[in-house]
Length: 95
Image 1 (spheres, one colour):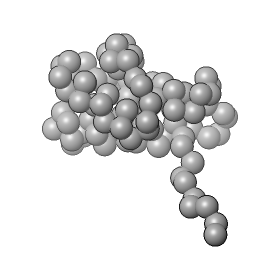
Image 2 (tube, one colour):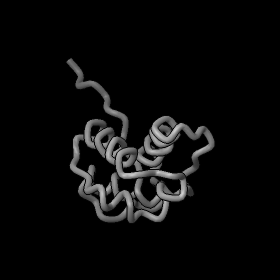
Image 3 (cartoon, helix red, strand yellow):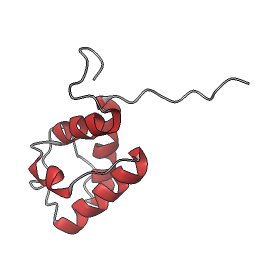
Image 4 (cartoon, one colour):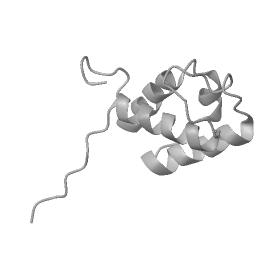
């Protein structure tokens, strides 16, 4: 019997997950990858909720400080991807 196919994890898929969850958690439908969590009005409780969802989704541990310090959701998506894959730089053309 063939193994089930698992979608390949990419920086783009991590970032898309963050954008979708931030839109829901922060109740802001127009969130983009360029947005900053603090500029969106994120407080420690909302960001902690986001970090908990990331940890469940990707089975990783994320420091809440990294969420606060990320300049954008795209940058945070890169960090989530690096943590989940163990790779420290996204391969060219596969973000």
